[in-house]
Length: 222
Image 1 (cartoon, rainbow, N blue to C red):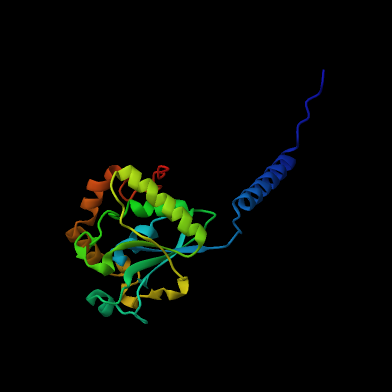
Image 2: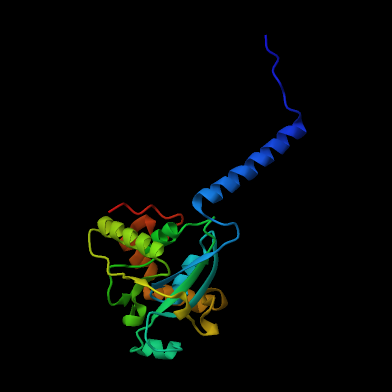
């Protein structure tokens, strides 16, 4: 009869810790993620106050910055962009930890926080500066976003008008300070605006229980 070997308690704990460390290292290496690295994506979803508010709730998002992108006018301002003619959209630069949240998850969530079938703006905000867009900063982001868009078109059964546009992140211009973190610094005004604009009601009509939900449901393959 063989004698069962029992590891001393301290040895078990050390082995477990070593195993977890090796497992975490292997997992990060397998996914090509360097510990501590961050990535970013620039999204246009209508009012940048709302996009910033939605993505601040996402685990793994490190920072959100409202701004302008996609146009031809240098040094855009809120007044100029709102007036039209600059080509810029209201956007949010979302910096995230890819070890905690993936680009695919962020895009899947983005679809459920906007109406991607509306070419004229978003909800009560009308005009070119309020159109939706995904600004890809790499060929990989471009590919993944295009695949996700095709899947959403299949899910909705109608065309998705949100373009996926290559963009040098350096061309992003932060918005004025008073726009940053507006949902927290001016919460009463923000909440009244969001309700009056009908954003959440329209999202519920379009997406049902999936509207603004985290974690998002996977996007079906096209």
